[in-house]
Length: 635
Image 1 (cartoon, rainbow, N blue to C red):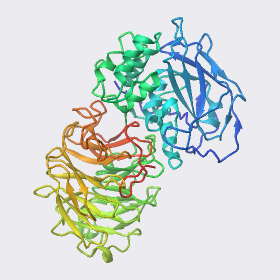
Image 2: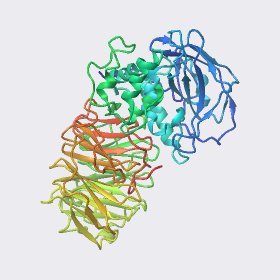
Image 3: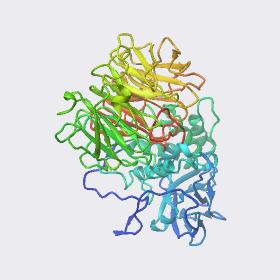
Image 4: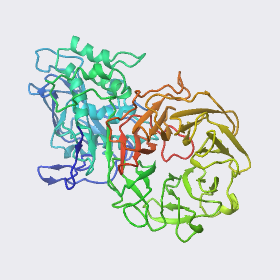
């Protein structure tokens, strides 16, 4: 069961503002920076809270307040209380004024509760629960907090890429924005003041999988509401990753489940009994334990390609907009809030499939057709960071363009389906004809290109959707070198390169429902790794494809309405499915998923062409630097 937040319901963002006792407190502002050196430390405000195991108080538990670290993923978190506070006989605790000092007002904070008696007369050392608080300087705005299984599930799933051992949350110094956005995502799915789902900050119309969240909370409660031993061993055994180490507490068990969402699903589901404390939960075991949130609004209308900018905002090209002309561009915040009421358009956008963001933050959109220019054969529009169309280009052989990619030097590559060529633009977009020539590059070597990606050597790779034997084409930056390579599949519809230093190209074969892997053997040359393309993991007429910071491959299945994850090139078994046979997200409201994009929080974003929405899989992937300009990089 998903909860649909109805239109008109007030959205309240804890991550900066709270509505408490009908009084709007001051302090609502923009995004929070995790710059630990940006301001002087300040004394912390009083914080009251409750620790609950299910619906019962946990007494004698140690509660510690942490500030997230910035010295590496899963490291550097700082304990702010000396000593930690302890819950009383009612499970309540108070962190008094002056008991801690904020590293800065913007430092991201969270609570961790360890051990305690869940009402059975003895301590359960396996209890570890957490709740996020957001910016340290805003803690005083919280009327009270609840730490329970629901806050733990929300925190773990959203922060999975940033969690290390010992409940340490941390990020690299280059990815403070990714962690900031992940904290905001927690607030969408849980309300920390009452420990319930969904969160008050969820955008209007968002679909939150509350029943699944409660079921996961009930799975954890099976151990927490016990004396440990037998009940907890059942949880730990079921949560143990394949070839991994068994967890020893409820938080590490939750992390293992979040990072291995298709592992032992039935056994974990069986731990959530009908008498479990949170409900209503799921009536049957899901296919996986991913948590997916679906957003609409912002003018989404047949959304196709999707991309993420440097701040984590999500942009989508709408093939047909709600107004005339028939296309627009939607912008959402990193937490799914619409930033464009009906989509951005100025009349030049028309039948837009492709979208990419360049190093300057400009948004490039393909217009398959045009009116009044280029004899109706399409163009590229460039939008600035505010969503205004500032330029339109149609030289250099552009002819019914359907896909676009950018590179770190600011150059732009277009896949022209109309005349089976490609075009390259310089960073200012103004010298197309001198670079590409009037008819474009690749004639006779490109066949109805449907997608484009750029490798670390600045070769552009094109998926030839209309090739008779499933070829892909690489073209050098000056257009002088062209390679045509068989993919082993048919109907290539998506293409991606993996991270710098790995040197592989991945192809989504729509017609044969498979994925091909090619290894670079030189500049623009490659060999097919396996003559039999990869299948399984739910691959069903794939379209969008992307590679995460670990090199794993993510695929949007247009035909199956699911998401597939495959082991990447550096894994022990490249191409092995990491998603179940049905794919991830059979319950995630996907419908004709077209495009896919990864962000610096580890979220996987999918555009639903068939339902005018986008879906976010919380913390499912390894973060990548955004925007994607060339091959993916770890931020």
